Image 1 (cartoon, helix red, strand yellow):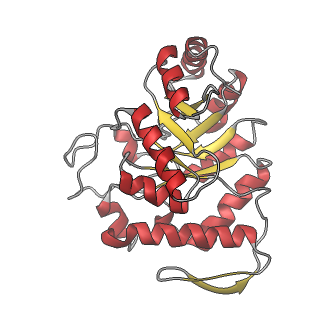
Image 2: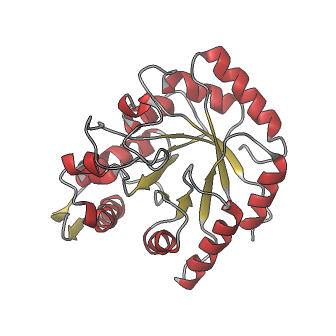
Image 3: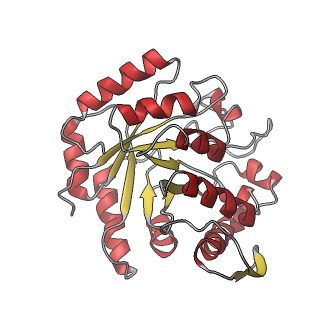
Length: 288
């Protein structure tokens, strides 16, 4: 397993009530952190049958679910005022968009940021939200796989084409092309089923707030990664609440490559002070 310390980044649950990305992202970069992650929810149906994974009911734990900013507009704003930090989603919901248009949007943000974009995706817990986008609940994994394959073709091939159940287009031109393969990370529970899907279709795993036993899960994921014939080690991004250096060391030994801490975004002063405290608590970990 890795003897490298995890990279440390910040995740902001963006909303129209919080500090805008173009004001928070420079603070994250100035504090020395490695990455900035944002989520996606286009809308939340007022009546839902799907239970939230945290509450176990239709009740939402935070009204920012109703107020989430568009992730790619947010990351474009952050790209304009930063130079180094990775710009990523935790997580985006590609199947709720047109894949050709989304591929263009992601490639454009990657181009404008000089190759700093990573794509964190989810299958989608809110089946009612997915239904409003015409996504059949029982086929959302297949649909996500096809979206990723189709977008990669558009990013990679001079004349791209794709033929699937949910995505079809003939030979096409599409620029800009990302300067390297856009990393794809999947936010999902730490199960063998999810690990196998990731090993077949993506580059790494983002834990969920409900995951426990991260070190053991990371080792299990690495084993499944190898069983699927993947070279090297997968990227593993762990969500954490507050920094503990001993835990960071255990996670690093188990193969965790990145750790994300939540932002405070009430105002710039509070945000900067929180970032200073987190950076101090993880001193010795890699933040760049």
